[in-house]
Image (cartoon, one colour):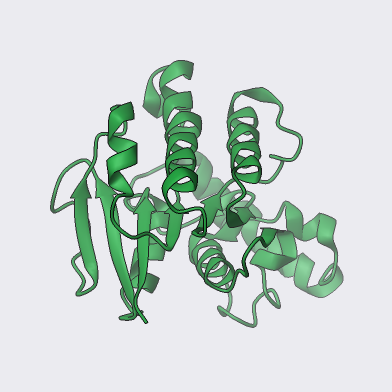
Length: 234
């Protein structure tokens, strides 16, 4: 039976990994929200849907079509957004509008959300936005899975000094020491850098397996299976 999936944020680091995984699942019919057609890798089960996130009236009609699963991987930085207000629109307002519209039209649907470690405390601009979205999702009544990764590792082409430092200097010894001495420590792995492929795979698997009314929050060891047994050496 075909399941209908909508993804927001498919052009981001986690979103691209989700698209690659979804392309291998022909039983899933995928609609990806884009600002411009042709911006995502083509696949047989993918339909790009031009969408204006700024238009509050666009959210209801979006879910006039079937939706069994909504994946939200939206995110930016304050520097890239240009202001705190612009940042909050992307990281807080857009996800909340999607969740509200889905709950109204498809209350039996599932949601997979990319959040952040520390969102349970919700202090500051970034974590405050993540915490607000998580609260909206909890109040919606929708079955959902939330992943809370720490620093994201990726093969991003764009040069970012902090990411280079983490990937080359911090992550290798952190992960190696964790495997040797802290293999079952929730505190250690909660803050460990994690690759985007692990985040995407965990979120997709967890969301697809949700039962009606179920809520799951995954972080730390949940995102580091083994931690290297599933994906090989990060």
